[in-house]
Length: 464
Ligand SMILES: *[C@@H]1O[C@H](CO)[C@@H](O)[C@H](O)[C@H]1NC(C)=O
Ligand SMILES: *[C@@H]1O[C@H](CO)[C@@H](O)[C@H](O)[C@H]1NC(C)=O
Ligand SMILES: *[C@@H]1O[C@H](CO)[C@@H](O)[C@H](O)[C@H]1NC(C)=O
Ligand SMILES: *[C@@H]1O[C@H](CO)[C@@H](O)[C@H](O)[C@H]1NC(C)=O
Ligand SMILES: *[C@@H]1O[C@H](CO)[C@@H](O)[C@H](O)[C@H]1NC(C)=O
Image (cartoon, rainbow, N blue to C red; front, top):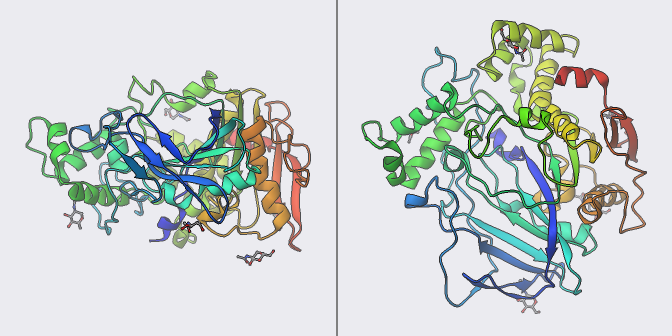
């Protein structure tokens, strides 16, 4: 399945408070974990730390609960089970137009565990100083991904031993986003790598209601008086089949089980909250890739795709007037296939990045990762070589790029460099007036490019 390889839809690094000096035995009150030395890096790592009770049975779709107490010392030396996985839609049309038929569609079910609320911690082995903590929330469109690809040792090394890393897992697909929940923010700063903001519907909009009723029908809960109680008793393998079937039934490149506006935890759509400047944190850094949309558009349709039809499928609630207006915005953006790649990438990843930057006032930094082909997720291997080989194998580029993020995590400013060999020029803050960005690219001859550029006014206009 082509899309399974590009599960990195939304990723963020978040720097927060300070951790205690390293020790190889930790007592969390409810459990004691023995960490171990990573012989390759010299760091101490704790793999598979439980941070919540197993979200199974009556805790399925409940807010996370404290773990039960486990006596004795547990060895924290094994990567935890991943959460149940699904993927993005693969269909030519949206299932949310009335003539589209059922959401059911065949796909092989991957194996994982519902008991997946674990995290991995890596600390440098030496030193007694308190250090900033970088929390990595993996990507995957809320449907896939896990902590396993993201080795916190990578970030500790890029920070010269100046951070502690925590890589978390969270419930995915219908297990996490049939209803939703998250803990309140505890962070002093945020980094987004390809900000991901899919259409976020009200919980009772026809789109999430159709998804809910598909889940109920396909799991045999239709005649239950209490459908939620029935769903909590459904065998996890049946639910996982429904998860993959329904997720695959979405319009190509879209993700169906995503957060909704519930009116309680998420009170309004993020675009509206950002307009009101409702953000936490002292600083923000965001990276986008030049062609974010390319991985989420069916390139087999390059010769036939029509921009109005594409818009109507991507945004099933669009009126005819909305489709006409959207089509006009992209009419000078190349061939129809280029237009729809632009629509997918800008509406879901790139424009939300500028909405965030605006909300942070002049406390944000913006980067663009353009090393060809500049597709979604290509920046991530530079912070996490554990996730895959970086596409530009140049030591100066790799160190300069990855260290800039850890400099930001440590100092809230990528210009304060722990390693004097980092040659990225002064990275100016982004503001509505200046629109400064740092471009990370390479020349055809293989020379790294670090260049101050300005956000295009036409892009800002399309985002509006
Ligand atoms: C790390 O090295 C120690 C001492 O040589 C050894 O006992 C341990 O098995 C090694 N750990 C791993 C994961 O290789
Ligand atoms: C998933 O789809 C397969 C193939 O169409 C079907 O046999 C199976 O019953 C479906 N399962 C669920 C739970 O939707
Ligand atoms: C979509 O169209 C409706 C009415 O046709 C209009 O009220 C709304 O502002 C339009 N939305 C956008 C984003 O243009
Ligand atoms: C990257 O370059 C280094 C030398 O600079 C080399 O040792 C390594 O094998 C290269 N990696 C890949 C994946 O080509
Ligand atoms: C990045 O560099 C390539 C040449 O290697 C060039 O074709 C491309 O236009 C550059 N991208 C940006 C956004 O400047």
